[in-house]
Length: 355
Ligand code: PLP
Ligand code: COI
Image 1 (cartoon, rainbow, N blue to C red):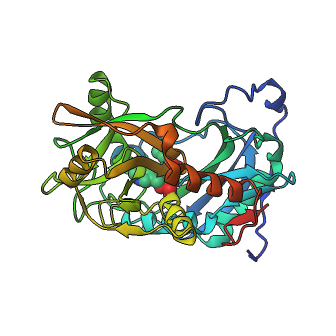
Image 2 (cartoon, helix red, strand yellow; image 1 turned 90 degrees about the horizontal axis):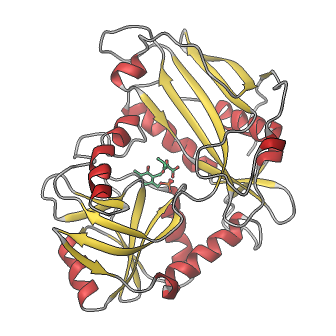
C-alpha cells in the first residue's frame, strides 16, 4: 500500500503498561495499548494527526455524538506472523466500509492516508503489544464521532477520529446457544443496518439481555417486515452448511457486509466448496436441522472469528445441532484462514498488510 507520508506528532507515554499486562488474561476489548491515534476534522479538513498516550479526551457534554448518535466505528485485527513480523488483515475493506458508514450517517469521510497511516503508526509504536499466542491478536478499533457542541439536529461540522488497539482473545470462548428473535428488530429496510454505527449496537442490548435471562448466549436477528428470514447473529454474520454447501444470507441494507464473511466465501470457493448467498427462511433452517441436512451453523466476524452455534431456539422450542467438534467444513476453512492470518501459509489473496 503506497500512500503519501502523513506528518504525525508523537507524544510517548511516560510509562509503558506492557510489563504489567498479563497476556494470558486479555479478554476481548478490555486492555488497551500504551498509545492511541487521533485526528480532528475542522473547517472542512482533517488535521492534528497525533499519537498520544492512551487515555481520556476532554469533550463538551453537548457534543452531538452523545445526544444524537452520530458515531461510527470499525474493527480489524493485527496478527503476529510466524516470522515475527506483524500484519493487519484486509484493512482496505474496513477503510471502505468506514467511509460507507460515514456517508450513511452524514459524517465527514476520511482520506485513506489518514486511516492507514494512523493505524500503521500506532501499531508501529505499540508493536510489542501484539500477542503471539494461538487465536490471539491485536484488535484495532478506529472510530469517529461528531464533536459540535450544538443541540440542534443536523450533521456536525466537526469530528474526531481515534484509533485504539487492544490485545485480545476471541470474543466468544465456547459454542453458542442462540435464540431466533422475532419480536425485536436490529435493522429495517431504509435504515442504518449496513452501517457500523453506535445505535445499531445500543438497540441490540435489551433484546440480548432478555435472551440471556432466558439462558441463551446470543440472538439470530430476523427481517423486520415478516420476521421469517434469518439475517445476522449478534455482531457477526451467519453461515450454515446445508447438503455440504455453505448457505449464508445475502448482503442487503439490513445486514452488515462483513469482511470475515467475504473472506470465508472466497476461501470456501477456492477449496471447491459451493456457496449460496440468498435469503434463508427460518423454516428452512429448522426443517434442515430436523432432517439432518443442516450439518453446521456458525457466526463469522472479526471479533467473533468463526464461532460455532450448538443450539438454535425458535418460539420456545430448542433444536440441538451436530457436535461442533465434528464440523469439517467450518473447521477446515477456519484453519486455512488462520494459517493465512498468522503467515503459516502463503497469502495467495494478498490480504495481509505487513506493518
Ligand atoms: N455484523 C455485525 C452487526 C457486526 O458488528 C460485525 C462485526 O464487525 C459483523 C457482522 C462481522 O463483520 P466483520 O467480519 O467485517 O467483522
Ligand atoms: C467486530 O467484529 O469488529 C465488531 O465490531 C464486533 C464488536 C461490536 C464486538
